[in-house]
Image (cartoon, rainbow, N blue to C red; front, side, top):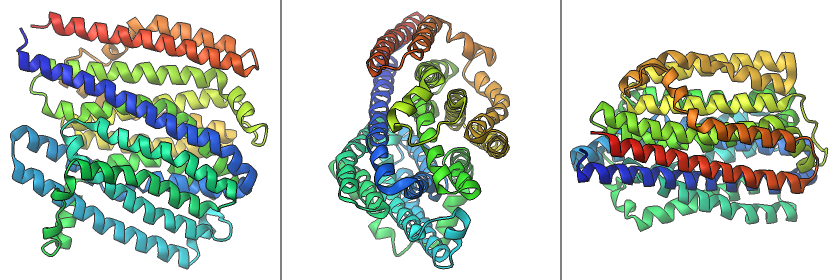
Length: 496
């Protein structure tokens, strides 16, 4: 039988999994609200070209996770291991080296972006309007500050308290909605809006860091002893984690710049809208796999890894497949209603969005799980191959079928992840990859109901019908969530 400590640990993990999923859903909901509420106003006030510049700056805000250099994931893994061993010296050293190395990389990135702006490269490469390169440099600077504030909170994530980070991010995203909307209404340009958005996202992180006493852990005393060799050593150790970040950005927000380089910022703005829609499927769903990263690192046997991975996988599948079904049937209707015909809607875009989002969710599960199972190098290589094939597929797909072709081609890279799923299955006690699919059988009735409901809803054009359908799907999702929890509880009670 399980000990009381094991039972308590499992219950704690389950609560954190649910809490993290809730906050991530609210977080993405707030960012989706920003997109839904302010985008029509931005397009109306700025025009498609300036909105395209905002799309590039927003994608850059996400893409500058490349500044991370693998530091954040490395720091989290090392600190989680130090917590497990009770090694406070290793914990402090990992935190110190992570913060100072990231600061060094950020300074270099701001300097390089300013140089590219001054020589006119940014304007020429991405067909930017007047002043556009300055906006991108400002975005790099704001991102460096924002990501430093996020890195400060890694001790909480290492303890498995990832939901606190998500909560801070959510409050910032919610605050940004009325403030940025007011600025756009008053006629503010892209630069002030980006600066204000970044400030809203940074402030809650600083408040959490202060309330948790994390400022006391900052390595002020180490500044004089810090050397470039230390930064290079940290970046070297974090290379494989960094490669996963490069891969994630390459197959998502970097494509915004690809579209801008081919067809200009206006077309990039349309793709950015579609990309953010696809993230409803991939990012919200895959947040459960982020929770499992630290937990799998601390698991000591196959049984624990099996149970923890299964909980994460079922949560990811529930939210990602539900989102994919919605966009499969309703993308065109939602875009026409939302943007009032100001943006041309690519044909068959729903199919592309669904596949692109599902491939993204699957990728996050595989890569995060591989890091938690000490398969970081193989996971990083598989993710890099996926991103490379995805970017090539996106380029070819855009040439052949526009934005719909880009989404379809960009989703093909997931095939590169299949080999490593066999290793994950072995480490987690599954017979083979097919066991992942069989575990979804109890959820199939709910998915069938959801798909049928969205299909019939797509035959109408009344907003009230869409809202009723979403409420009904929410009820189905809650029922499926109860099915997952009951299954896990029954499995836990029957285990030896």
